[in-house]
Image 1 (tube, rainbow, N blue to C red):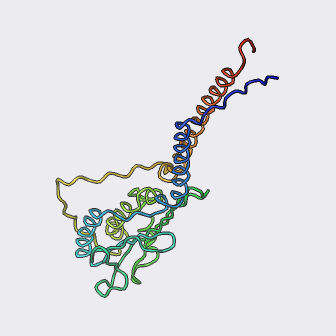
Image 2 (image 1 turned 120 degrees about the vertical axis):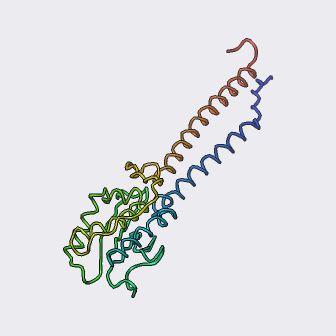
Image 3 (image 1 turned 180 degrees about the horizontal axis):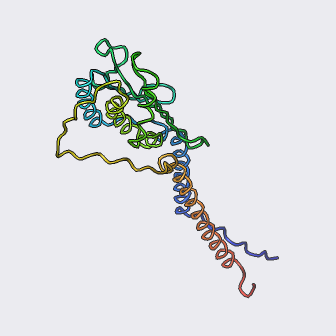
Length: 250
């Protein structure tokens, strides 16, 4: 009695193991980047650049000397944590509760960046406060006047560091318009210095979702590789099965 010869099982190909290892690494990298990007990058409020702060302080010094009013800025996270503070007294020096500043005006911006997993939008609030000799009406007029310089909430969301410094420089002019102080002396600036352009307003899609996009691309690559590996293995199985059949059979 003869038994039919069983088709030989194809040997595991070392290349297949390499493919599976690469696939595993791709999955780990993509999933890990998505997890760690969930609250990073997009939720950190950037402070003004060093050159922005360095350019702002001298302008506030000239205005303070001309009007007898201290001017400052304060940038905060949504929790109230300080990101940047400064004034005519210097970078990092607030105007509030300082004996050198009996009269002062400060612009404060609070910015919130939501995580990509959240359905809430990013937001910012901007307020102007001052010493007790300024009326609420005057401070409100200064606050609303910032929009004339393009300093609305969306700009503080897009580039909070640049916006808070620009707002601080605009304070002396707006205070003078209320009649609470004489016009400030014209600031002297380097004629060769380039004026910083307004930041481009637009979507923060890539800032908040690059991890998700990377993960999706990685998973798509995994799917394509799995399909290729499946076709290759299926072809080998068919070839091995055909080689194991007795001649003359189908």
